Length: 325
Ligand code: ATP
View 1: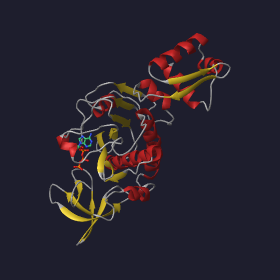
View 2: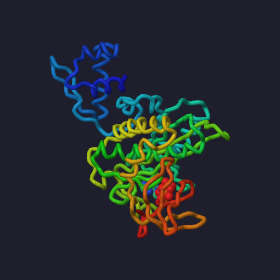
View 3: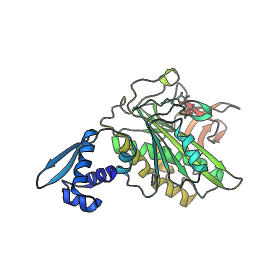
View 4: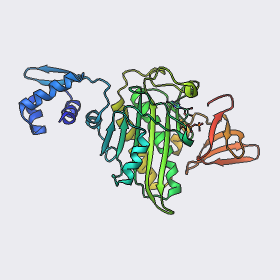
């Protein structure tokens, strides 16, 4: 009821009358009135004017299932939403749901993670109220080796959503980081459960630093948050919705083409290291070169003295010559 009431207020261009709300939600006048009072108690500013009705003036940056559902405007992403105030890691929960048969598009969101993960078992700082911690469960009909491209699809969606919703110039550090002014604001961790030729499920976890003011030792020199980079009035639930709206469009193109050809040019234009010197930290053999963009299957093209080398994600990290980018 709360989610429906919020959605009705949000979707109204102007005031929405009590009568209209009763009819569209199929509840009594008293129920609407009580619902409004609950919303006000949660911190929503609602204006009530006689003969006109109700108008939502401002929403607090709350994160909970109702808030997330009230913003939902996607076709399939987040059709099922599982919200935790605290969890170990949204990837762990999404994998569990994947095992239990949860549908494609199920979205897990947490207010805080106590065991947030990055690649290669590293940890992801996930303090309460400060960030977005979420994972989507996907059941794509592509081959296992094609699924690693989903990290790039997600990176594209996050960068685009931050640009569109907040006007900040988010860039991508291939393959799985989003950066603002050269510092990391988002990490993406894709994990999958596959048979030889088929995928059981893929989970794509996204951590975005929203209002963090400081970071612990390991991340301190490379991390930043949207707030630190000038983002104002950031509403996490709204930004989450913006990410999945973008994701759906890029994901559909990826499934159609079974490649990134539909977004390659745009991805390259977002690439923070494009045409710059990079160091590829390949555990077997690190090397330097100039990043020239991605292939349509998501490898990074690096120009070296001996020609173009294609770098696959997996175990590799990319750095600038003098620092993180
Ligand atoms: P690399 O560029 O080295 O390949 P990565 O993108 O694979 O890194 P992840 O594994 O995604 O990195 O993230 C884990 C790393 O990110 C940690 O080792 C830490 O340095 C850093 N980190 C941890 N928490 C945060 C955070 N909230 N914001 C930004 N960076 C973080």
